Image (tube, rainbow, N blue to C red; front, side):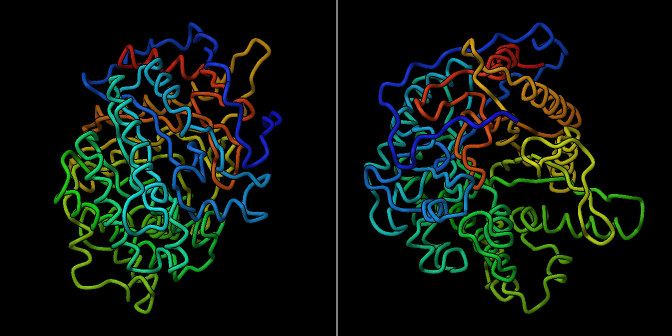
Amino acid sequence: MSMPTPRPPQGAAPSATAPAATTGPAPRADETPSAGLRFPPGFGWGAATSAYQIEGAAKEDGRGESIWDTFSHTPGRTRNGDTGDVAADHYHRYAEDLDLMRDIGLDSYRFSISWPRVQADGTGAPNQRGLDFYRRLVDGLHERGIAPMATLFHWDLPQSLQDAGGWESRDVAHRFADYAEIVFRALGDRVPVWLTVNEPKTVVQNGYLEGHHAPGRQDPDAAYLVAHHLHLAHGLAVAAFRATGSGRIGPALNLHPCYPADDSPEAARAARLYDGYENRLYLDPILTGRYPQDVLDDLGPDSRLVRGIHDGDLATIAAPVDLLAVQYYTPYYVTGDGATVGRWPTSQASWQQIHPDGMYDILTRVTRDYGPIPLTVTENGLPTPDTLDADGTVDDAGRVTFLRDHLAAVHRAMAAGVPLESYHVWSLLDNFEWDAGYDERWGLVHVDYQTQRRVLKRSAHWYRQVIAANGL
């Protein structure tokens, strides 16, 4: 692994005169699209980001504090004490980043809206300066022929709402619906696709079970009540959208296939329950109107999740959606005692096993089990130890291989009947990677955090050719 790029002092603004973005190396001959795998006409090629990871401007133009501001400023919570105060400075450099998207050839850009930028304390009248930023962003996307795909919640809960109980409080789901209505009324005529809650599972597992994401809790009983209230927030936002918006809406779920680690009946049973906690706890309420019974039985009748379900909740949660956003990173292999073991090489992120067939398996499984709901892949990628070479380029050949192999699996799933509409690489830009700080680089575009200079990596050039060819 290379040494990490030096970071500016947290809270210090980078140079306002950063050099313009530069190109990276051209794809090698063996990386040009040649496999003969063509995607259907109109297939959408995109990339994804999230607000706290790239925007910076943490205290500007009326933005309030989020739980990630609090968490990242708490000593020992993030690698190197990194924060999102500046991040990739996208708030000030969005026009440059929009030009990069156009140059790569993106059809779609999936981004998130910062709740505390729109409502500083999560309630009340909107902050017009925050809404204006997203209006400029959306207008800039349209000007460049790129379709906006907006996520309402990508983990940056206003700290004031956390102080009032956070997602353990049922009231926060209703505050989320109020916020969603504000955003729909402000931007709904310009955004064709909305996503409600990004990866509720990650909030539950990383924020409330393991405690290495904001708000940093380790409380299993609270965790699954949080899951229910996130689902309720999703359902209430869908209702607000139907009343005020136009276009399409759905959730964004990170889904991971769970395989038995061996051929024993014990492993098969354990893998099934593991799948319940990993996938069905999030798919079933939204798409079938019920929680998986094996998970409820495992939690027990006195769990806060079971006690927190009110009459009518599941009908609200299961309101029909227009699409499902799927995010795939890794498989799990489950032993008879419920532990997990590794089977495949890992990326720079030790939790991520690189297994492209898992993409095929999870996409076909969703279609098989839940019917032909339209799907979009909204995150898929990996970190690589990228360095800026002496000639000013970034050669991330490992990312090219990863994306090529996963896109081949996507193509195979579509040939098997999966109604997939679009694919978004995670991520457009190197960014603040939550508790890993700036040590992991996930972007198609290299960001020098000292100067904010952008450089297209080899993967960006390769992806441009894939988009132009509409295939591999």
